[in-house]
Image 1 (cartoon, rainbow, N blue to C red):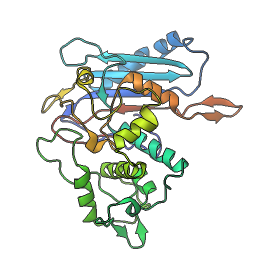
Image 2 (tube, rainbow, N blue to C red; image 1 turned 60 degrees about the vertical axis):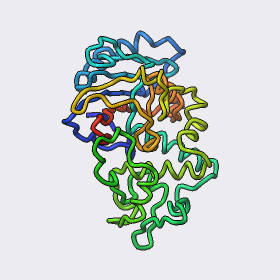
Image 3 (cartoon, rainbow, N blue to C red; image 1 turned 120 degrees about the vertical axis):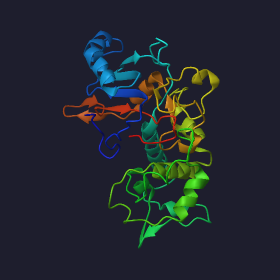
Image 4 (cartoon, rainbow, N blue to C red; image 1 turned 90 degrees about the horizontal axis):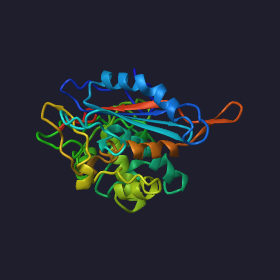
Length: 312
């Protein structure tokens, strides 16, 4: 089983119709010595484990990223496209799916720290004047409810339309129109139920507060300062040429603008960029004053080309 961070991930939804690509991000618990000192150790420690993870995934390719102290290992497995014999590397582009949600909550926390908003603010406060956000009795949906999958919202707003490019539906207008007519089944904050639409509404709200679109805000606050030049939702032709493609029913999904679902799962990235992001994560203190990062891993199988968005 894949370890999950409490409150961030649910069990993986079965996807019998396709296995696409897998990104595994492993953050070692202890911070080691100077940069470069542990490269051989990391390769030895992850050699068999990495192969086992890749084979277990059933995916045609995988990129493994390990950060320990100031040392980093980025290792590719399989092939970037079925039959081409090219092993992926740290520059190979891939869809990171629901890891996008962690970026959304990081941006939310940063803006709350700066005083631009409060976690307890009601969503209604940032909705357009014509939109009435549903309530359950006196309980309104807060930004924190959206960030913790406890707003009482469904996973999706409905069935994905046929022939939809993955991660391009629903649009901002479609989800807010849905929200205005939705009846909450229970009070927000009382039940945790996974919701992709909730995170996209949260991203819309952050854009409203920040005064610019969400991808631009993410680039300004997180990916730009960290030099994560391959992380975003609008890949260039050069980046698309580096995209790892999977196989399955419907064939490989196209490399497309996924702005519509940037907050819930639309981000593209690379192993090299994710290593930069892992280094950026806050450290905690172990007893005795030794700094460590939260141990854990992420494994992702992005949505296939038939338009379905089942994911972590």
